[in-house]
Length: 256
Image 1 (cartoon, rainbow, N blue to C red):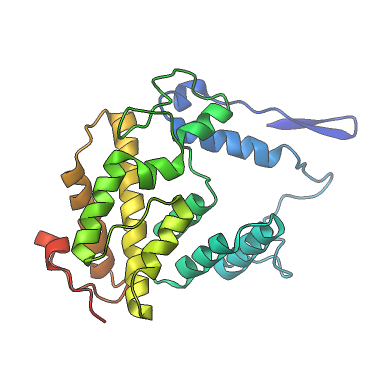
Image 2: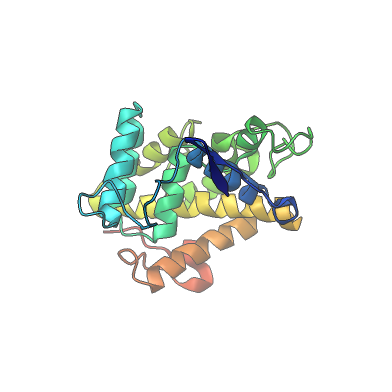
């Protein structure tokens, strides 16, 4: 992994190309890890130990991790809109995976094709195209909100919630506009869950198309969103959406 050379630590990263081949997400994560470790070095004559330095006692907690990430992004001059969205996601009782995914979307930390191109992981012009609708080389906002396929998914959700179609906005603004379309704390929490379920499902479908060569089926995407919402209800993640698994969106009650 690395060695001391005189007074300087030199990392020696060995990336297994065979393991990463065909797995763009793993490749992207490997590059992020290398970037993270590049400016770090181990101590000399000190036993290895695990310490969470943002906490005085060195003990990890989810709360301290959230505070650390929030403060770090504040230092990096994150927009107030993004911070408001992070706080809303944090306060909503939803599965951890959805929370983390939501944060990664807000900070554009998913291995989208523009990120992979930036790190010189993909080169083919075909590989750079939108996985859902092969028309243009696009970014995260396009994939989750503005792609032709994504728009159709959102339109179906708007019909279910009896909301007017929103104007085309970039990611975080689209998220906030979706939440603000309803009034009341409970409804906003439900909308937060629904929004995260939508983008989570679209992202997973994108991965299935790329890695498993599946076809893009809008009805299948909607069904998958229904399953995510049903699981959240069955596990008591959020205030009941009053849904039936057989036809989640069709029978959903959106009342307080």
